[in-house]
Length: 174
Image (cartoon, rainbow, N blue to C red):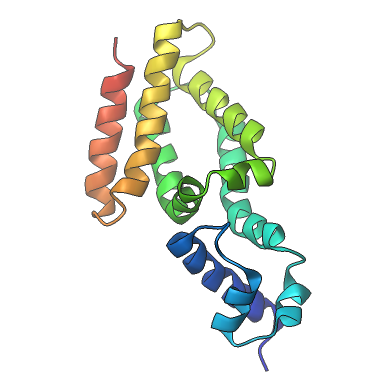
């Protein structure tokens, strides 16, 4: 008999696969339970709702990003961008899920948190005194890196990382 944590992990894996394939809003708990060969009540034992299941998939990324921005001090841009890229790459499936179905951020009340993290990352990159133009360049740098993680997920990590970080640094240059 499978332990509850094994079943929970299997549910998350199948849900992630279906969410990536057809979007969060187009994936029902019945589709997930059917794919797993379990009943819907068995799925509800582990997750109270689809939102609860989605949140459980997104939460590790949110926790890691929260710790990332909380532990950092303004400093060397290359290192910050490399570390941010590494974090985004580890969670690229979450990025893909969100981009495929951005309403998920609204449903889970995450929009404000995402904007706050982005502002904090910008502050870490630029320090306390920065112009509107510098903030725009930081937005291009961070957004471009995030997009690279999704768009070039099939390319080897080191190749994407090197090009994305170099491009982000070029965007920050004035």
